[in-house]
Length: 162
Image 1 (cartoon, rainbow, N blue to C red):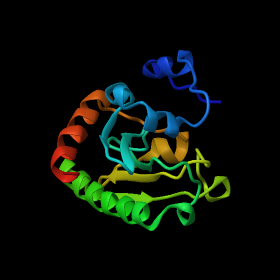
Image 2 (image 1 turned 60 degrees about the horizontal axis):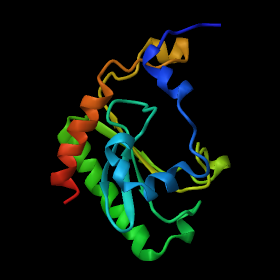
Image 3 (image 1 turned 90 degrees about the vertical axis):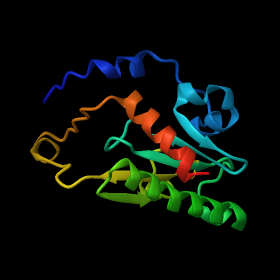
């Protein structure tokens, strides 16, 4: 077994876990947006940095409605989520991404880590952003400052999500 030392994650293990749906909690606590790294919200959705990102700048767009499939969203909410996703891609391109993975994992069997609340992932990609450590070590290296990335994304959201 391989051991990788990652002291910056120690807060995760010691922090109090949210009771109930974490995405509903984000939806219901706009006064904690900075702490939770929510950089955009409106009446239908919010956008938040992924706490354990695949790549720097990975964020999610989450409807406020607690549903587990797009078929349960109103047409208005689905179209709004789609418009925000389009703007999110533009934001990540302005951020400098060479490409973007974008998608929704629907329910646990569809690969959703939080299966009870629909959420759309936008994952920025760069040429050469994978290397041997991912393939051989089954690990990812995140070599940039998360807070700095959040502030950059937040600033860009003022333009792209306006």
